[in-house]
Length: 358
Ligand SMILES: *[C@@H]1O[C@H](CO)[C@@H](O)[C@H](O)[C@H]1NC(C)=O
Ligand SMILES: *[C@@H]1O[C@H](CO)[C@@H](O)[C@H](O)[C@H]1NC(C)=O
Ligand SMILES: *[C@@H]1O[C@H](CO)[C@@H](O)[C@H](O)[C@H]1NC(C)=O
Ligand SMILES: *[C@@H]1O[C@H](CO)[C@@H](O)[C@H](O)[C@H]1NC(C)=O
Image 1 (tube, protein in one colour):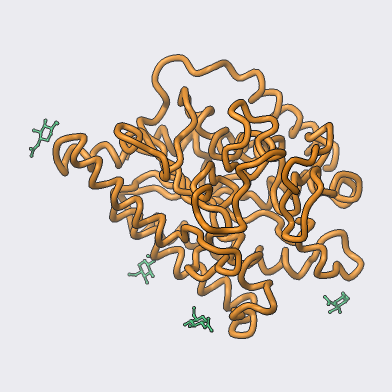
Image 2 (cartoon, helix red, strand yellow; image 1 turned 180 degrees about the horizontal axis):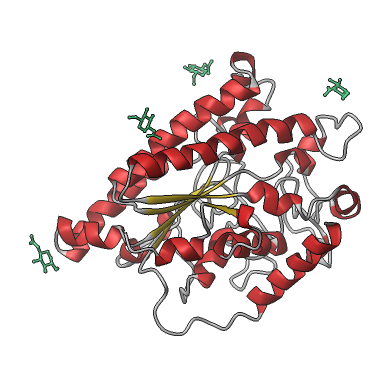
């Protein structure tokens, strides 16, 4: 299993590296991204928050240098945009203009969560509710730019929508002991239930704004990130209790995707099994050898500005104490787009989703 997964990992990476540049039109007319630091591409740069990274070594392997992406190179949204055939990166909502609102924007915000209070100890952030309000503005701009409601609705129904959110509802909420603690109010199972209830309402709001093709990413193995290991691993390589709590969320999210598909029959939602895709790489042995962050981090777990990061970024599973380097993003994005194992995406992958005639 260890070798199989790693060989697949390498093949995947190669397939994206040698992927030809997009020729002709992208496979969807528009791509909208919602989420947290795993997809944020600059929306936090002008917010008053500790959760912003528009400085080196972030972006050291990105063609445009430091942009506010929380990794060394491209993030999952960037790689998906390329796989979809977009010539350019999808711009952050914060700096988007004109036709950008028709072609797609990225609302992602570091430290943001499904719950609006998530991440508050770090400063300002754009919670999923606020991202949806921003999307409401985008919808009205589409009506203006495309001429009328009908044209906007038809256009927005053809876009791909991707959501990568929920990690901070654990990292920057449930597992912060001194916070207004959800962990005192809820067991992990109850917390997963309230999160999924809220998320499901938010997904319905997105549907009401015209989304019809929606890919929802499950959470990765948060119990393995360096920031969590400080909790104490009780002899394991990762914090098993955190991974178990996150798995409850993932299981309920996958069930909810079924529900949404049953109830909203003119739309299709898919679930991306990021936990499984990443767990294949995060074997105990690999964690022990490659689990340390690539950059030198400060007490908040982010890279210290201006410090040289490790020279061979692909040999680390984490760039800082929270975020994977580009190589891991490549793995997740490519398998979300074209699943390698049938369990990577449910009920099918993004490539199949965008080809559906709804
Ligand atoms: C809306 O706009 C489209 C194209 O811009 C046009 O073909 C259509 O007739 C318009 N519909 C209405 C109801 O105005
Ligand atoms: C704690 O969170 C609850 C629910 O989000 C909120 O109603 C309450 O005002 C918060 N309390 C404090 C002290 O932040
Ligand atoms: C540590 O592991 C033991 C044995 O699996 C378990 O009983 C105990 O609850 C764990 N402690 C913590 C803090 O997770
Ligand atoms: C689907 O509809 C059923 C019956 O109306 C309802 O109980 C359930 O909560 C709905 N699920 C979702 C995800 O909307």
